[in-house]
Each structure stands twice: as C-alpha cells, then as structure tokens.
Amino acid sequence: MRRIDKDTFLRSFKVLSNQSFDLFLGAGASISSGIHSGSDLVWLFKRELLSVSGIINGKKFQDLKVEANKKIIQSYFVEEDSKAINPYSYYFEKCYPDPLVRQEFLTSLVRDKKPSIGFMCLSALVGQQKLNTVWTTNFDDLIERAINKLDISCQVVSPENAKSVQNFRNDIPTVVKLHGDFRYDSLQNTDDNLHHFFIDASAQRGLLVVGYSGSDESVLQTLEKALENPNAFPKGLIWCIPKEIAPSERLSNLIEKANTQNQRSGFMVIDSFDYFLFQKIN
Image (cartoon, rainbow, N blue to C red; front, top):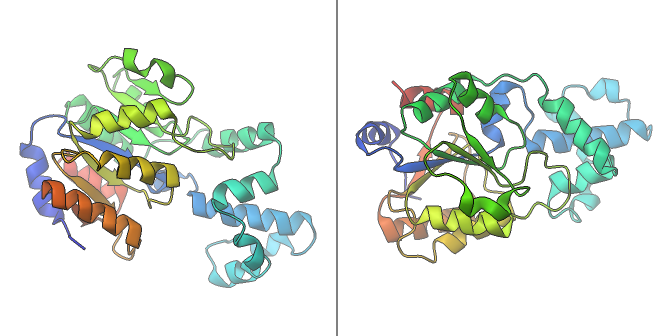
C-alpha cells in the first residue's frame, strides 16, 4: 500500500497551480458538524426497529457507541444483514417505508447544523481559487453554507438538474451532489450525466478524497471507469484515511492502478477532516 506523506503533500499543494485538485467528501467530513455517518444511522434504524416492536427497551440503548449495546442489537440482525447489499438503504427503508417520512427524517437530521471549521477552511480555499469543484455523497448542505458565509456564489449540480450539466458555468465554484440533496430512496446509483461529468473532470485534475470509506458501489465503479483512461487524475488520486482504518482490497487495488499510471497516487493518513483542512490554509 503506497503511502503519501502528509507534510510533503501540504507543502506541494501550496506550490501547485490553482485547481490542480478537486475535493471529494464523504460522510466522515460532516460528523464534527453533528451529522451522523451512514453506519451510525444503520445502528439507529436497527435500534428503532427493535424498540418499537417491543423486543428491547430503546431507552436502555441510547448510547450506540457502547459496544455492549451494539452487540445485543446486532444479535437480532445477523441473518438479515446477509440480505442487505447496502445496509443504509435497506434498513432506512425497512424502518421508514414511506419516502415522505424518510425525507422528513433527513430534513430534521440536518436542520440548523452549522459548518465545522473544516468546511470554513474549505470555503477559504475556494475563495483563494485553490479549489473550484467539490464532489460529495452527502445529503447535507454544509459545503454550500460555508461557501455562502464568505459571500461567494456557488452552483449545485445534482441528479435533479444533471441533464443540463454541460450548460453549467466552469468559472464559479461547483458542488456536485452525486446522490442528490436527500438520499432517502433505495436507488443510489450515480446519475449517468454526473458519471460522464466526473469522468471528464478526472482527465484534467487530481482528486483528494476525505471522509469517505469507499463503500458506495456506484462511486467505485465510476472511479474504476475513470482509470480506464491512462491519463486519469494527472495530479494524483490521494485517498485520506484515519490512522486506525485499513482500506479494502478493492480500494487498495484501485489506488495501486492509479499510481501505476501517474506515480502520484496513494493513501494519506490524516487526524481528521477539520484539522487537515485547517493545515491546508496555513
């Protein structure tokens, strides 16, 4: 597994020309803003299913960080987990079958959440024109809120307006929401128009991935498709991971292929999204 030294990257990033990289954010970036990750929500859904059915007393399982609580809850879902290709979608829909209820659940989840320092540092990099495009699988609007706080206009591209993506301006900051504003439906595949938009971008710039585990099949397929172009990610595909996380074999193979092509790709260990982005502007 090829490692990228963080300090070396930070020094290089300051020297490289503006917009050498796009940024790709996953759910891990939003945790410090008070928004649950997808895996945390799966535990919440499982607890709710058991609690409402009277199988457990939900009040006794409030803390889902406690391993003993998770172990008891999981004991009821061992067989069912084998049916869940995407646990987030599967248990979300099982817990709340009505799409309207799922949408309102997520609306309440992100309401009044404020961008953490990492998002504010991201907006500063946008203001400095070091970054112009941010891709995300997240359903919250923390990126847009942070950029707007600096009185910078940005455009949002999502499956809802992706058919006209070729008409979007390339001279203003762009936030691309690969799964839309509210990921409450079971279908989460990346829209074909966004897929091609991403492939085109991958041939022009590097990609820095932060707070994302790589568990989304449609995104991984898009990355693998991008690497069919030998000139993909010319400045590198750099995947940030926490110290305690080991990437999957598929993700390791993807990064290895990228590095074989451009000699600039690898995994980079970071402490957190917030601290890493803070380091980038200092």
